Image (tube, rainbow, N blue to C red; front, top):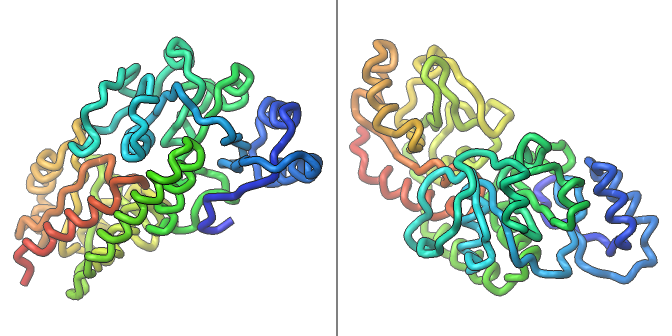
Amino acid sequence: MSHVFRRFVPALGLAAVSTLLLAGCSGAADVATAVTAESSAPTAAIIDNCGTPVDTTAAPQRIVTIKSTATEMLLALGLGDRIVGSAFQDGPVPSQWAGTDIPVISDFAPSQEAVLALEPDFVFAGWESMLTPEAAGDRASLSGLGIGSYVAPSACKEADYKPAKLGFDDVFAEIEEAGQVFHAEDAATTLVADQKAELATITPDDRSLTALWYSSGTDTPYVGAGIGAPQMIMEKLGLTNIAAGIDDTWSSLGWEAIVDANPDVIVLVDASWNTADSKIAQLKANPATAQLDAVVGSRYLVVPFPAGEAGVRNVAATADLDAQLAALDIR
């Protein structure tokens, strides 16, 4: 299923949904089989989310969000008052969405005990790995407790659901689907329209510049590869990603390969645990990378960590990086 996040299927009877979830339905074929068996049921809004059916008939009212992308999606849709707790925030909320007092239950993956203590009716996770027995609880167990769950579609890992290559249309579809799941369709429509208008103002650079998206790592750097949000953003900027040939969202890439590529600019991910400044210091201290043209010329672009994952911050981040790129002295 390429570049299609919204897959609506006929409503499953409650018994069928429970059976699917308790069985840990993990693939499109399982969902499709159950849908066929219940084809005579009344039509309602069931979304196939990473292989798990999500009933969107009732609007979630007490939501736990995990990862910044999930929290900020709801804030951007005007639903901050429904968030009863958040976890694994990757950085501060942008000023335009700040102001809602949201309890933080964990700086990293929350335990199921911490999640259940908030008495939520729904868990929204930015990573599929957050909905496991080792974290907030697997989706079948949560369902058995009457708690719905949803994963950002761009984070689905199975081949039938994982985007072959992320594009801005996928991000917009994700916003629209969130609007349906959380009953904020009008807000989602407005948000998408605004972001499309902002994206249209960005003209790709025409100088055939190459770039490295440096996320983290010291001995071996972790970089933005060829199919995720970093690649999507760099393409819009007119930058050629030196790691574009790696068929993954993120990947390790040896310093030797980076030195050989000698990128014109380096995009530095700014995170509290690995700041842009610390990366610059490391690049300058390493005799090999200190000679890179981008390091010698201080040709850096800086992006906040949460903006590098698929979500509501991608368009604004692209516009900001575009302005930074235009300000660089590249001869």
